[in-house]
Length: 272
Image 1 (cartoon, helix red, strand yellow):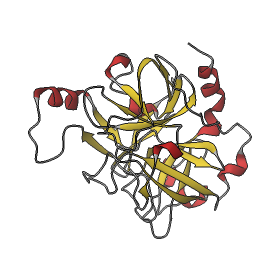
Image 2 (tube, rainbow, N blue to C red; image 1 turned 45 degrees about the vertical axis):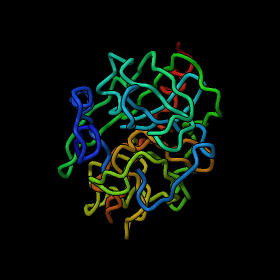
Image 3 (spheres, rainbow, N blue to C red; image 1 turned 90 degrees about the horizontal axis):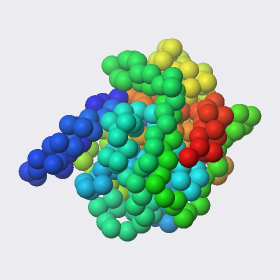
């Protein structure tokens, strides 16, 4: 996990506004946009949304529309605006963040799992209970994605095909984010990700599922993809959380296991 200060692309002059936003949005991003994937059409994934400051053309996290006024994202994505939700907006239906298409909606309220916590593992920042729900100021007229339930164990069976997507970068430290990309990958056995050569005791199978190519790496979520969905069999099974590097062999991306938190998430869907 790397701490990335968000600002404009390298080689341009940062305005005072951009610098101010950069200071506010110094966020920890998963070292796990999508590496090894291809450009995608937002119309094909209408429940996928970007989270961004209203006045700046970048998205620093993503999320999933799970009800017309509710977006599920990672808990660490809301660090900078949990008490000031007006600092960000949600954008749906946009292939490129710098374009003007799609739907923009402000955030009215933020809920984060009360047991959210940070820790350090292998020089990276990791997260526990990495779940948050954004309540929007107005509904988004788009299909929503259903949640993995508490008995959805088969979704996490090793070898299951999973889809990842996001507007982030294609390599750790790259500056090529801003275009929606997607890739297919596979669920990896918990025992592999908890092995000594991988995440060891930092990997908690109730907290996470892991997905990627364990032996070779190469297909992964990456910087600024935090909060984006891991989709298995048309169901929201995971939330991009953290990892070591992007597409690194032996260190696939870690995704918050939605089934573990389904009761808490569902309770938020009924709140105003």
